[in-house]
Length: 114
Image (cartoon, rainbow, N blue to C red; front, side, top):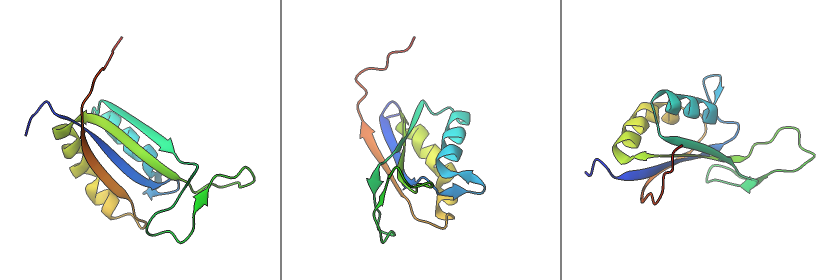
């Protein structure tokens, strides 16, 4: 494996999914920061469904609680992301609800730092 190759790790889940008492996306972002992952972004969808959901979840202004799709996206070297996934894999497997994780190679065209 090319140790300089970059990838994007995506976790598709729900905004209400939890690991212990923490929201899944908050737990993952905090852990990724601690482990030195280069960048992480969480996207909240306005509508979506998955294979374990019998209904379409959507954002409506009159709903007080919103169960919406989220995508947790991380970019770093492939070897770093594979190592990070091994750390979180069992936590994801132990969640009562489902999720989807993908790892795709990417080509970084520009990474401008201050």
